[in-house]
Amino acid sequence: RFSLMTMILQRSLLLIITIQIASKFYVICALNSVERPAIGSSRSPTSTALSSVFRIHETFLDGAEWASVQKFQSNGAPNNKVRSPAGKMEVVVGSILDTSEKVVGVRADASTDMPVVALEKDCFIYQESLAVIPSSYSEKDYDAIIMTLVASLASVHCARPIASRVGGSSSDFIKSDGKVVVVGGSDHALFAARGLAALGMDVFLVSTGNARVDDKRITVLNPAVGEMEIGFCTYINKFDSIVDTVSDESTNIEFDDAVEDWRKSGVLTLLRTRHNCEQYISTMTESQKIVEDRGLLFGPGKVKDHLRRVSKNSARATLICPPSGFGKSVQTLLENGVTFSWKTDGNTMIRSWSVPQFWELASWPRDAAGSNVRFGFPVVDDLDTISNEIKMFEQAEKDEENEGTQEIRKGSSNPFIEEISGVNGLAKKIVEEKKNALLFLSAPFCRTCKSLSPGYTRLARTRQEDDFLFAKADTSGPIGKELGRKLDVNSVPMFLLFRDGKRFGTPLSINKLPSKTLHQALEYLATGAEWDADALDAIKDSEKKR
Image 1: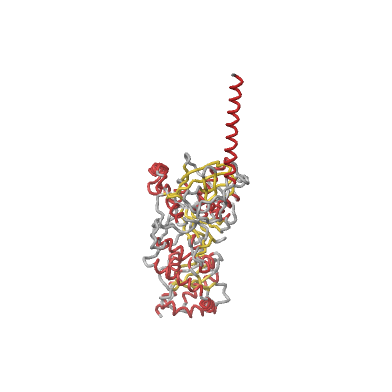
Image 2: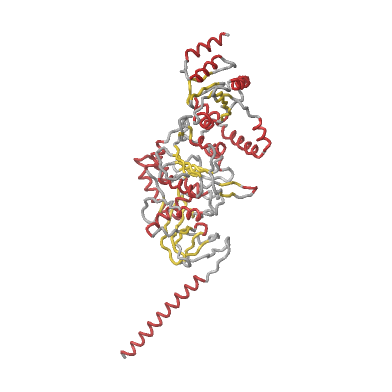
């Protein structure tokens, strides 16, 4: 009996082992025999399989950062109808079966018709989000890799310059280079600047603090640049995108199909019309906004309540569909050692706020024009500015296409007078060059200015032996008005002198040329003498009596 029971047990054990081996063999064969459909298939395709999933994290975007990302939903095409308090994505770290390459990506919705990569246990990730993790990273870096993917979506990938409708196309093209401005000096801002530089962009990092960046591709600026304290937007002049990590200059973060995005904020419109900036990306989280509104005393407690609500109501969040090429951007960051992480509790990841970001916003100087806009951003002068600048911008685009117009402009320049365009032109042609100069401020509507122009040209022509720069600037329009404010000049015509690039003396209101007052002021400039206001007033009084 004992031998019979032993034989039965042995055969039962052998049968169980045989069944387990057969089932494993069946699963492996099934994984390796999955069809690989073409990119863009309407089904949920499987292009490769993973041997294992190492980590999965549920992550969220909220506030202005989520609003910025919404414009790039549906594989890069704007999805203006998406409205929810937060966006959600599950980020997966795993290993590819065939090559053992470690990868990171965004878990795909089961109903998606976008190309996906199959993982174990019916888990899929979007193919556009797939990034290969370099071998220099280890298991202890997985959380940082996941956070890098999440943080880079808005601040790096969506901020890449776009060349709109190139060659009459109906779609947008990502530029391989361009100028991008990053506002802020926090760790998140430094990450965005380094990430964009790694993607080949020329980056300007603007901060009220002493940000230190060891990257020649990144230029660090203060909000007020140089001796003249020029606003950073005016100083940089033309740029493609701006990433605002400190605040949100957009007045309405919700979208409307019937109204163009740029028309909703005066600052955004001026960024486009004055600086050719096509992308404004704010990465301000809802937590940052809460602390800004409630302050350091009550804000942090409200933030904790907000984060708990987001985690509790995760089902209400919109699933994020990564834009085209997102995985390539993430992989480039990882290959260049550009990563970002923050403190998080539990398995839910959502970027909150930091004290440096709060203090930078609180200490950022405001524009002297009376608005609440941070200094350096373009300012709306009056209610008609927006519509007028849009018309001027559209007309300028038409003029650029007309080569004949450009040739006429070149041929009509005055060889004796240097044209100055705004504060930026003044800084580059007079202040930075440390010139001795006479600047004639005028306006198209000023009849006296027009009558003075021939005499001013004659003065410049007859004094060519002097080491002077004779310059002229238009004070009309937004750029001219900004120059007038910077020089504290409220009327035209007006003449200003500069010695070694610095203001010399006081503004002179001259209504007729030649002028003995202006002649004497130029003598002071030429001989190195001190400014004598009393002597000039006496000369001016004698001229009036005549």
